[in-house]
Amino acid sequence: MNLAESLRHPIFKVVGEIADSKKEKAFAIGGYVRDLLLNRDVKDIDIVVEGSGIELAKAAAKKLGVKKVTVYKNFGTAMFISEGYEIEFVGARKESYRSNSRKPIVEDGTIEDDQQRRDFTINALALSLNSSSFGELIDPFNGLQDLEGRIIRTPLDPDITYSDDPLRMMRAIRFASQLKFTIVPDSIDAIRNNADRLKIVSMERIEVELNKIMMTTRPSIGLKLLMRTGLLKEFFPELLKLKGVERRNGIAHKDNFYHTLEVIDNVAMESDNLWLRWAALMHDIAKPQTKRFMPGLGWTFHGHEDRGARMVPKIFKRLKLPLDQKMKYVQKLVLLHLRPIALTKEEITDSAIRRMLFDAGDDIDDLMILCRADITSKNESKVKRYLKNYDLVKQKLIEVEQKDSVRNFQPPVSGECIMETFGIPPSANVGKLKRLIKEAILEGEIRNDYDEAFDFMLLKGAELGLEKAN
Ligand code: ATP
Ligand code: MG
Image 1 (cartoon, rainbow, N blue to C red):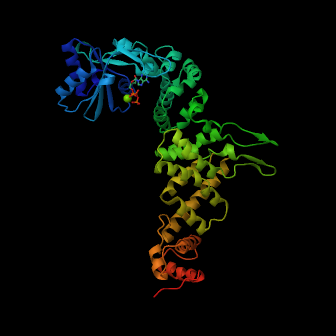
Image 2 (image 1 turned 60 degrees about the vertical axis):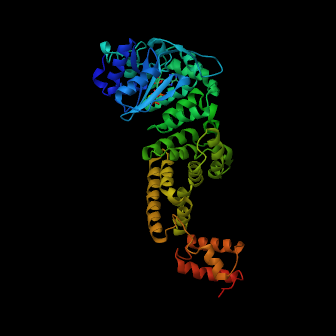
Image 3 (image 1 turned 135 degrees about the vertical axis):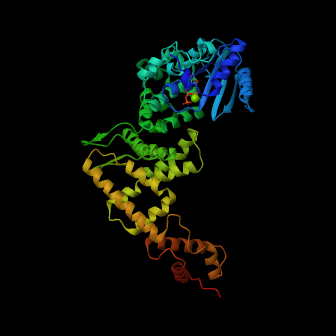
């Protein structure tokens, strides 16, 4: 097979010419070739040369008129950016591993050596760039066949490949979910056997792969594989704990692991927001801890939203996820995820709507996406009824927000105004009055408006024994 026609970026001809003149062999390799054959968008190009990658990068940059070349001397690699592509250069290498580290001992090698050290056959494809064989596919491990068969397979014995660098186990599952490929059975077995080797991989690297899985169109594919291979329990045991069904007096609760996966897939259909997907992953995380069997009532998970929200920081910290407002957002959605459901069960009052708007603020739309996604009942008429109720809630939300604008609640009467009016210093009474005003607005006793709030403040101030200053 020859792909010369597809190698349009000028870098390929330029690299070929330089390599020809130095009597070296150079190739495009790895993800670039794979994605080219799959017709996927690619933004990085990997070049391998049987020679010095750094020298080749410098010479190629010069020919292309690229000024800035970044050299990683320790790794023997170099990269630059050209026409929006990140182009990385490395010398062909042979690798050998020790048991306690995923960093190999590296020596110069041939293109075959270099292809052998790649993680999967579909990632080991190379395209020759020298002029006499420009565009020819070098495929010693039948990667093309595996691409066509949509298969993830390691070039060498999978037990060794995964044990050498256990990050490859995460990558296998990531590619399986990203590309919707199947991991061959002996590779699955090898991952199961080597799952505990994940310990030598840094959490940062695990998290990158995990988030790539979370961003696929159906994250459940990858999450199920993580569970089945035993990888999940290495870094996210809380999620695994959701798995299983208990039955008492003939009453079973649903399997909260599979339910959670359905919710993430539902959210993924509506939104590309990674953190909304994380909220879906965590929304029921405290169900195992809060599970009770109440005779007459069945299974309850009382307070799991509150307890779950409190579990978020610890899990985020361990998984090296951001601890900033993104975590706060996930926490908030976990905490509030039952609120819209609760609303649909009773008569929907304006004050309940106002309270939810106040608590959710700008995240109200995401909260509604999460709640709709949370409906995974197999009972169609039930689902229909719920969804209809949500539409009602949504309608109400719009009406109430138009009337009272509490979504980004700003107190209509400020603390300064309270102090000035009563001639008092900063004190407990100021906070108390502010709270009373807010409550009155949310309850619908007064409107969210300066005049009404001011009169209400005078009234409540008097009850507290405060007098209007002159
Ligand atoms: P993507 O860019 O979509 O994440 P990719 O396959 O291009 O996928 P990169 O991390 O860019 O992944 O790596 C480029 C190439 O380097 C891969 O295609 C593969 O050949 C090789 N590679 C990357 N990581 C490993 C690894 N842990 N073990 C073996 N080979 C690897
Ligand atoms: Mg890549």
